[in-house]
Image (tube, rainbow over all chains, first blue to last red; front, side):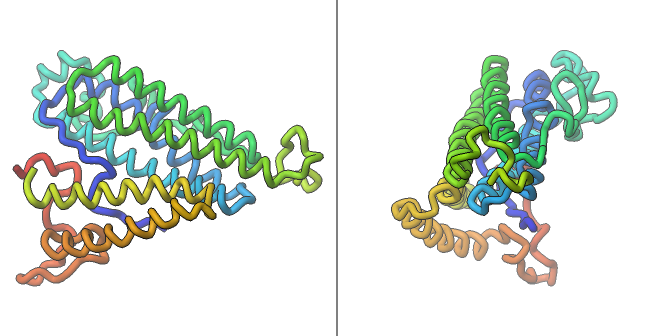
Length: 201
Length: 87
């Protein structure tokens, strides 16, 4: 169960619309390293997780990712507000505009629509947690690349905040792997799945 | 920033500290410093939230009231992504 709070996790106030910035930032909504994939990944992985502390980490990071989905949507809304068709063409957003106008649709920057094929929920504790560590690094590198491509200080400020959250989440998933290792039987040296294989606790 | 935005910023600051501490406590539930910090910040957050919702309207639907003309207050006012338009 979730409850909506009528505020953003971090304030977004972009005064200057910019089609080119929207064109690349949209990848962090619906792209392969985006926030929608992150929320979907963690919130669904919870059900196969045998350890309550780690379920807490998946729940709370997954919930924060939903707040990031909203932050990216807010940025796209402000970046595309009142853009003229000429500005949209000049920023390379015309191929998006033709089907979505300035509505928010989850897609990668290259036009590939959001797909669950970009994420995994394997039912295997170590496969999932290692996926999560990689996912946080991939999201961080996409934010690094966005910072190389946009100039506006209002936009960069919000992107920097999101980038820092990826770094913190990576640390917390590191905690999660540590917790799981501590709970394993010392004979399960090769980390076979404690969620399914009865002799591999 | 106007007065409402200032108070909202104070609430966002508290909430950010709570999110960060919550994630840490998930993996370190016996850390006393983190626990104390969490509850102190939560107390501060409650005070700001009460003042904010009293003055400016609901943050969650449960803070809603009947407006003077009888309108349910949840959908009154700007949504978060529209905030830059009200200055």
